[in-house]
Figure 1 (cartoon, helix red, strand yellow):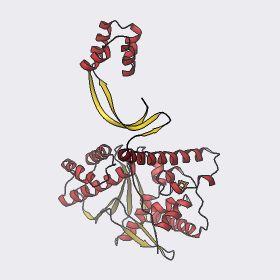
Figure 2: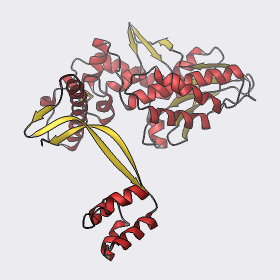
Figure 3: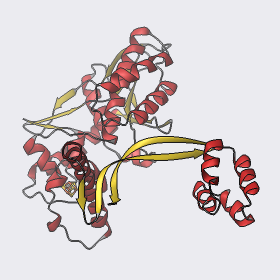
Figure 4: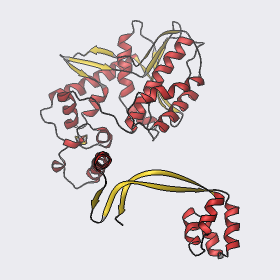
Length: 360
Ligand code: SF4
């Protein structure tokens, strides 16, 4: 039995990636932004159960749960981004307690057997609520932590929520008149909504069955770069760059994604090596953990006054209004001025940076 999810169907936009996922049954190994999304989903799941159980419309105090849930994730979770998204979610998301709720589900796995032999279609909608019995309709939600807000047509073209709606439709005994599909973008506090009727679902099922049939008939699995796919690709390190002609913009974009991932991976390997074995010297440069200082300046009128009193020229003063670097540059001609400004109008923060520096 082949288990087909909407993400697997999308992965087959690059047959090599799709085949890799089917053959190796590889699980998506999230890191960085992917991990933030996963952590937010875990938080949202707990929060929604909490709201339904308590019959509350919203509960900002649940923010205290951010820390324990975030702690379950690997240390390279971007915690500030995750907690920001959780706070956005809390500001926005409420369960409408004045409506009759027939059934709801959070992160529940749904599956149906397809008309294609040996194919099971399955998916896990983030959240859906069946209101009723009079006002028969279903809200189906998906949270998106993307930095870019999708346009309405991008949302409507995406198969994800439509796929989940098809699964929910089959799971319900009493079929609703229509479904309200909603992509919620906590980073932007925006919702993109659209609807599907039973006829739309039947049409979608035919379309998706055809797509799966096509996937199953494939006999070759070439690498076909596609920004969405490549960004999350699990087999990027096996991607045969050599098989891809290096003559178009898409390939260049693809290679940038691949190389960025490689740089990130090598960098974290090197960090571990330097931590264990000490600094690395190469071509007169040293890779190590260096203590670095950054300065935040405040009270610009006070700084300008000090510069005037020290005798700075008009051009230096007008340049100073533009940036911290210009102030620093101007101060070079006046002994001790920079140190005085920092002492009076600055805040120095210290941190450790992993970087290359010229050997002394
Ligand atoms: S990196 Fe891109 S082109 Fe290569 S296998 Fe993955 S999705 Fe396909």
